[in-house]
Length: 432
Image (tube, rainbow, N blue to C red; front, side, top):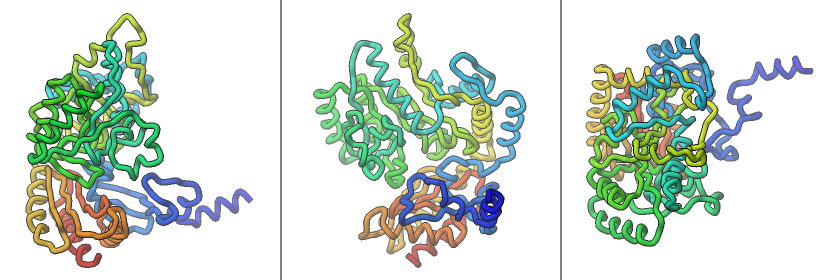
């Protein structure tokens, strides 16, 4: 009987077998039961179980910035796998972690000096929130409120979810979240209004921190704001001893044109959250960095003032080695030139698409391109599903955020591949 079951499973496709036991994230299985079975990925190309190829135009959720199975990174990781695979980081250290901290401090904003390891973007934010809360707790100053932007997204764990502003993610859990006050994203015209809101919040609440996605709000539809406008908010926070947390999980490692979006902003954050492209999509890892001042607040003869927050795979040597290889590639002349090429190509295509009758707005920042489409339907209605299917049918993996089409291609994408992505977007608009 067991052999018969195994034989039947061997005849089934990945898609069919998937439905038996798996529960996919960010998906309503009742209306979207199917998932495409991918069997191989190399460079910018995904290959499914039927041999169909797709250009990965969003770097698999902004992670695989050097393409899939990059030989430079995999060779470094293979070498590490022969030496040290996993060791608990509470009582031990190792060369990849030490070296990674040194290399990160070289390229992070100059006020950053301490590196804390986590598992993923949500847990990087979770650690940042806890750092801010305990920073004041250790100083015998209880602060429990956070400020965040409207339509922000920072992750799915409870602290990260609390500071996120998208109800589609948070609805069932609203009664269990920490105290948050939301402000609009500054746009140059509303800066003074926002400052008045901040003054009101600060005068009535014990504010621990302000968390923000610098320059680009990802899950909100790649909404963008200017560095000088954001700096108005950050300066207020600095002047009022409100810790600032930059969520660079999406924007970090070259996406916005600089190594980090915070490089473009005059006022630097106290805490930075990093993940996704950190390891170039090879293995999970995240980092929460902070200033020496924040770290010092946890030093005491009182053990309870230590930061008792830990992940089993924190500073995994293999993940650290992947991150080191990623940072080395990122700073190479070839990759920096590729980033510039994609940036300029996006600008040209954006200018072209601004004239399209179905397009309401187009914006670019670094390698990020976002196109908003006219729609009378709900943001996550049938238009989004039609677009996704059309893109996949044409061999391009693009995952619209509601009525917003966006691209974040791997830095190694070829001119021909990028042109196909652009052409596919134009063709799709004629169909939907």
